[in-house]
Image 1 (cartoon, rainbow, N blue to C red):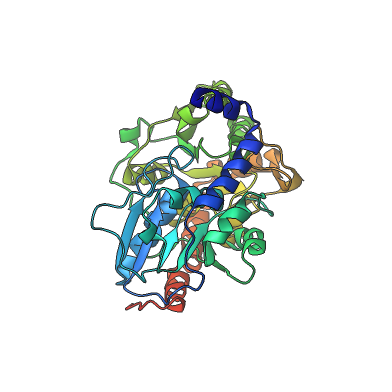
Image 2 (cartoon, rainbow, N blue to C red; image 1 turned 120 degrees about the horizontal axis):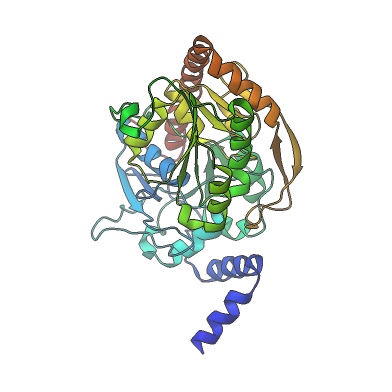
Amino acid sequence: MKTLSLTLWRVLPKLARRSAMARATAWLAPRPDRMPPSGAHGLAIAGEFSRASGLGQSARLMADAAERMGVPVWRTDVPTPVDNRAELQVPAGALPPPGAPLVVHINAPLLPLAFLRSPRSLVKNRRVIGYWAWELPTVPPEWHHGARFVHEVWTLSRFSAAALEPLAPGRVRVVPPPFVDAPPKPKHLGRDAFGLPADAVIVLVSFNLASSFARKNPLAAIAAFRAAFGDRPDRILIVKVNHPEHAPADFERLRQAAQAPNIRLETRILPTEDSHALTACCDIVLSLHRSEGFGLVLAEAMFLGKPVVTTGWSGNMDFMDSRTAALVGFDLIPVRDDRMVYRDSVWAEPDIGQATEHLRRLASDAATRYALGARAAEGVRLRLSADALASAMRDIGLTVPV
């Protein structure tokens, strides 16, 4: 009977499965108290601390910054992709005390499942805050179920906040990742550590294949690089791909597109400091995304003084402008995503020709590259301070010593 049920479940369309799971877990999961207590003791943060993902990095940045400000932090890990096993891993005796607010870096559709498989005391007697990111102007219907499980929502950008506002009217707050208090720290590795020539101009594209392949749009980045440089051996494109096993068909499309002597695929999951070292070794960071809730890779690159060539739309526009980045024009088009994660909205189709021009200009003029990178570093430090996090923590009742 169990086998039959699993078979029937698997033949349902993805959207039907997703909607059914969201409804069922929202009905069964324990809900927070209707009226949240004032914050006390410190901050409990749940997220993918042990995973190389955008939400994982946002959880690590928040925890590190809060601790630097003198706020006690309890870290609760979601060690595996939440669509496989959403269980918050709380070490024995390590539950945050009652009253400590809980900030959950798990997006709304999967939040009830995580609470269903977690100790009830993790949810009760505390303010629960969803730290969510969304990459389109509107959120899908299944997000509304998860909104019942939080008292308020924090998010990374104004773009994401505008999409999330209908879920929690008047309770959505922009709290960008506090890079200034927890900046990227590259390991001391030179180009030789990555097998890169010293005299080439290196362009980096970096993304997670567990995210939408269509949204990240790496094929457009490869097309722009090829149009700009052809097979020139002194121009090298590094395509860093996390979790290629998540979408083998998409990775094969990427591999086929990358069949050129000056394009290299990097599929290793590098330690964070090594990954930042790779970025530091490169000359230009390229992202022709169709949409971003924030753009962590771009923010990290800018902190490291790297010029970025990127789509001038969505969440990344919170921390860049035409003075600090080589922005690529775009048309807004209907969303088409084979995985059906993104739908019923619009996103950007970047201008590959304009991206090609930016790449040629920056590659041919080192002084221009350095100047743009310096402006990028200065601009992002002004826009991504820890002030928003400190203010948010004070407003929920926490004492922030610094």
